[in-house]
Image (tube, rainbow, N blue to C red; front, side, top):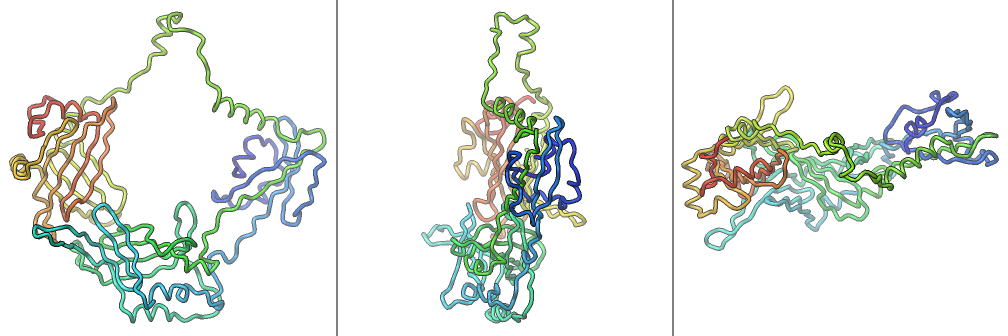
Length: 442
């Protein structure tokens, strides 16, 4: 357990404890061990601080707290020992055999050829049984750029290591920048990718993640065993520091308040309280008090949703998306101090919806969902056609008013937006043959 939470549970008086505690760090963990009065107290004494604790019941303990010695070379290494990241990654970035890693997403595939280029592509069969390929180059390197990178002067002395928090761990990495990709239609600049190489002993240079960190700039995390030869690049587990508390004469080994607390925790987790009164013995007032109160519904939400006044926003990465029923679907990004970037994916037009459904021979209405077609979005630079989106409104059984939304790009510049909610169930049940809500009273 952590030091402060453990001690604060039973502590009344602490003598000189705050003078020796390090600056609070939530990544440091401690485990308290309790000992009888006669137990040996001298082990590792030179690395521990001695304090005295007194509980509210006047129980007294002498505790040995470890001195936390800073890891002086945690973020740097000696450049003269030959284990430089440029040396360790040389075979990956400049080997004779072409080394590429892949990551498959629902629509896009990402190909990273180390020390060469990053490609984002999608392949599908065309009408003539051929294969149509849509691709962007997200970044690339020339052989000279790779050679210059690997010939970084191997100076003596200490070299700093970059860190990033991954899975709640401070993770060291080595970064390689690949630029000069396909021009971005949003800012007219070449696409660019930064590849972060992270030590993982059992990996084989596979891609851990791909994300767009800013407009047309990407970050790829690669797990590689090669960096693990340098100790500075090994991810270190957070150690648990032992605190040894010895009871003084006349004091029980274990504080009474902690013992009572643990008993209550066991009872809370494992003992089921049985109510002795049967329903027929309860008074009318008691019956009312035991009735489950249903959450109140905001009846105006249904009306606002149908009128497009209640819009749904989803997405947690660089891009977010907004759906306003009967109005539009769009994708946007907001950054403090900068103009809002908006890509319009489609607008509602009843006649175009009906024509699209007829031409595609789609079933616009199902038992649990309806499909609406939004068209006339911003022109797609790859197809030269306006973007468009299918919105799938799904009945999710339940009694609340929660709404969930997701979006996928199923084809180039063609999107699917899914909206699920219990409030859609009565609307879908009464919708017309084309999945429309026009004749439904709000």
